[in-house]
Image 1: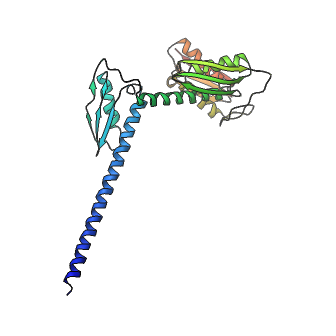
Image 2 (image 1 turned 60 degrees about the vertical axis):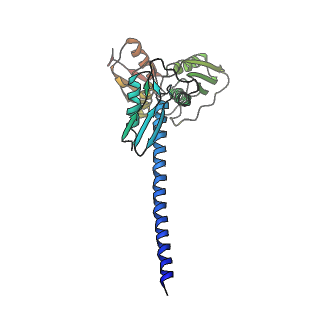
Image 3 (image 1 turned 45 degrees about the vertical axis):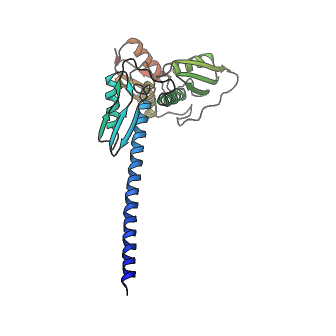
Length: 275
């Protein structure tokens, strides 16, 4: 009498169980697909940002912790670099490196990786130039617009004097990645300029020694002709002391000049900075 309903309930229960298991498997598969896609994107983005790999049309596929790399590079060191980058991504346990080495390989001109990498380079250059202008005692009050395209920096706005305009160009040129500077700043000493918005202390106030030290070090880090890692910087009462060893007298002179130009610096002691 109750056989059919019991059989029906049993069949329904089995169907529900199978559907739940199937849903869990599907959810697990979807979750793994998301992880795979995230890892692929991380590897590819790193390739796109690398100056050694961005010009190569590399392809990445990740499945369950295994990354498969394909494409062409000019040298074996680049192939190995691609592998090490992939292995450095969290969750990637194995790399099948199928990249081919072709000494005369030239990537297609419309490589999306190269375009993305160059755009990031230009953005970084713009940020570095803008920061240096804001930190400088000579250009911090300038109304300056900074843009970069393919390593060419364009400066727009106004400057209080020709010296300030020239100094802005010098700061921009001494920045990694800058190939040329189009200095369109207009000298207008009679017209007050509008200071840029910055988290730095305002002009005319006592600037903290720690802020000065940080900005001098950062200026070195943003400079193409000074190796800031070899220079020690300390500040006491606005007096900056430089220590360490540089490669040449020219580098030493530039290091001193850059420190002197940071807002709040009263003087620079450089006897302990040798070459």
